[in-house]
Amino acid sequence: MDTFYEPFYLFVPIYPIRNERCLPVLAALVGKPNCGKSTMFSAATLVDVEISNRIFTTIQPNKGIAYVRARCPCTELQVRCTPVNSLCRNGTRLLPINIVDIAGLVPDAHQGRGLGNQFLSDIMQADALIHVVDVSGSTDKDGNPVGPGTHDPAEDVAFFTQELDYWMLGIVQKMNLGRRVDLREKEFIAALHKQLAGLGIALADVEYAAAATGLKQAAPESAYLQFIELLRKKSKPITIAANKADVPGADKLHERLKERYDAVPCSAAAELMLRRAAEQQLVTYAPGDGDFAVSKELDDRQRKALDIIRALMKRFGSTGVQQALEKAVFGTLGMIAVYPVENEHKFSDKQGRVLPDVFLMKKGSTALDLAFKVHEDIGKKFIAAVDARTHKSVSASYQLKHNDTISIKAGR
Image (tube, rainbow, N blue to C red; front, side, top):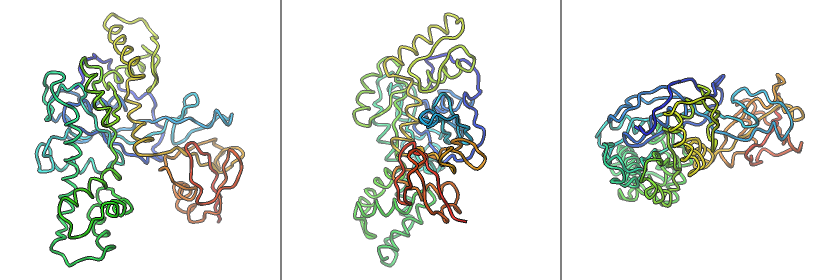
């Protein structure tokens, strides 16, 4: 648990979502016990969960909704938008994503240690993983408190990926491939995918990893591990959130972690305090901002805590929580924001709502992919698409760009 700040207590989301249409991304907060996952979850969602420095405080996954930001086209197009599946604040579109706080993972969890395989299964249902690491080095490999700087956080990164890889290897080994009649290559790949499909892994990712590693049915365990490592990187990309970066002495450990893993420095405790203070109108602050403004008279305790947070934000540019979420979605996972409309002249849908929806799509997605995302029937009856900004027609194979506004034309 992050205990550096005494928080303000209020648990109402800053941005209440109006509906749950189009929540395509599930991001899981993962890591060992006591690294600050639950604090980060509360900071990102303002859902009230138990936060303590006891091992395995989180048993069942906590679920909530967080937001990532994109520039809303309404400013450029000089229109007043009427969002439906998202929100717009001063030209910034707030896109909802599912987020889940998974129980702490300890070494040898794939063998049942700690809370074991149940939580590895929970982790693998996510599209993207945000590994919350105690960059202050003040918790050991099992999450027990130790002196700051006495544990190397890079070890936590290594053990976590190893746990996932060996757990996935165990699932593949249940196929007993060595005892089966030799399968043709396509049959072998299909069998692998069927075995791993319950983890939300796509056939295309299995094909890619098998081809890249040259995996064969009779390959040794080391070759299967190589295949699984690449498959995990492809299908479950990980963003490292270097939490507790504000703890004295964390700087050197963070620099080493950033150099190796491009970790995002953050303080979940600072972000949680700011969001609660903003709800109480003590400060003016939007998640991801590099500063805040004091709105009301504060007592000495509050002023001191906010001064410490401001110093942190000057060092890192923000508290880092929003940046970690957005790096996971737009960077590591490789998503783009696309705005489908029906009327390319008014940028509206059938009801006349302007820029009503925004979808998160994988980089490389096409106009046809967007049509299917809007509705399966529209995808099947796709005729053409129009770039609403330029009013030029684009083909079904047109690769979408971040913040595109596209009108889909479908037959009856």
